[in-house]
Image 1 (spheres, rainbow, N blue to C red):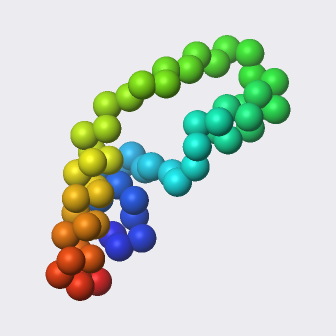
Image 2 (cartoon, helix red, strand yellow; image 1 turned 60 degrees about the horizontal axis):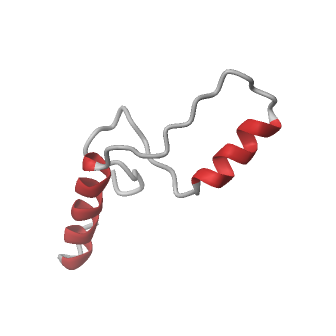
Length: 61
C-alpha cells in the first residue's frame, strides 16, 4: 500500500502526470471518440494525500 497512490480505493489509481501529457498521448493515437471532462471529484485523492501525510508524520512505513 505504501507505493499505491490511491490509498482509499484500490480499484482506482491516480497517476502523477498532467492532463496535458495524457491528452497529447491520446491525440497521438488518433482516437476520434474522446470526450474530456477537466473537472473531477477529488475526494479519494484528497483522502489518500491525508493518509500519506499522516504516515510521513508518524514515520510509518
